[in-house]
Image: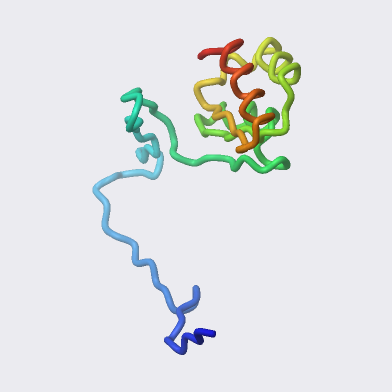
Length: 122
């Protein structure tokens, strides 16, 4: 067994010092960033905060709520194809720019992802 006796830091040991800014107001701040994806070379612009793909967080409801603020949601893998259809046809198509599809590693997950990508290629 390896026991590490090094000094550990916690939140009371760390100080984040504010820097001077040339901005006149906090309303001048923009959190938007542009990201170019490595393999597709596609660009995405938005605020780089993502709701996790957990089944209680990465939901369609969360995607609708935070896409209005240009935030991203990784939709959990447990939705079936008919649930995706209902979501997209019910107005979800407008927010797909801020949605990522999650999948697992088994053959059922791969099949579900393939069906979804065939039906909704964008």
